[in-house]
Length: 515
Image (cartoon, rainbow, N blue to C red; front, side, top):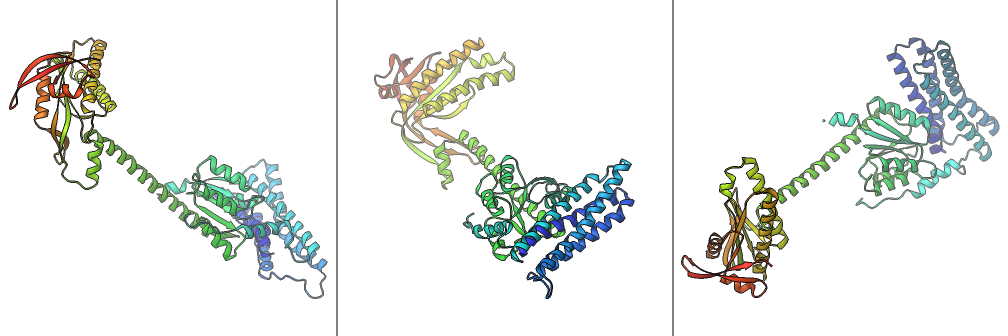
């Protein structure tokens, strides 16, 4: 019976007192002094009501005094509970009538709401007394206590794995309580502190609201119709979207078992009804501060992840993926001897002369357009761009990981690069051609530098590939005999002749024809 009285009588009675405190504060702020005497009388009546309810709860046995019949006892109980409520209702009606006669509206809506709460509590008291008359003083079989019993049966622990001041003041709070007076008092107190408050009268509505919009805190009654507050708590913590919202449970159930299990289920705090407004404000502020810090931590981590991805992208523009992985694994010196690779040099013929008549921004834009297309082609063929040197472009295949078809990849890439240059030249009306040189052989590859570091390649193969390009012709692809041998019959060739390569003597060369 104690939990029932707390939930159905004491909590609403306390809410009426708190509501009156708010109205009195507003009346003083608005300098409505003529209202204060009647408001003070109403508050005295509410204090009397709360004191009487507290005395009943304290002496929960509440048997009829010796010599008093149960009927007389229940009648006296009803009278003592209703008398202060009738006073509150009567004074509120008089004040509303006076306002209507004078056409004054300040606080009228609040007084009307207070009167409605008093009417509702009067109805609850009548129902409680009628029920007690039918069952003695045992309310255990009532519908209300059945809800309490259901809550106690279903409460079960969940798995364990389960600028600041300004942000807190403007927080969004969801209040869930089936008692209208409780909702109104909480809404008024929280709104006065600058919070945005939305209310729900049942668990299903609360879950819908929590799924539809963002909340910084939820104040949740434990005893709700149809779906218990504990079930609402479980569902909130089970949904990814709402699992991080702190929940303060407010209930007339003050048994330690209920408190522990709600905290285990994910509740941030647990307050017993009637709630001390100062304690409530302290708990609300603490929960909101914790939520704000948690949100800031999540944003900080998200920002770090974004910066990490941005740094990763920049690093991969400088170094191959395999080299980045090796550096992360602790290698400090990256130096590899590659036994078989193919190198390509491409030069834009005459671009230096052409660029002299172009504005600087157009020079950069034009080169950027061509090299961006080359970058896309290199990525498509799985080869490694080494660097650009002025208007020259250098690519290698077979590094940093071995590729058996390195010569084929480079040959196919070369034909596509010539096509890209021709297409851009036609589209821009710039008389431009490219020449390409290719050679295959062993190289050394590694990372040099400590600040503006770069992945580069060295050796005779690189020098020879550069000679292949410089001795080629505009619009042609010149390959060495070594590369020609690796390509076999997959491409069409015409013999170009021979060139002298320093340290190697005469070398036979070929033009690779487009496929």
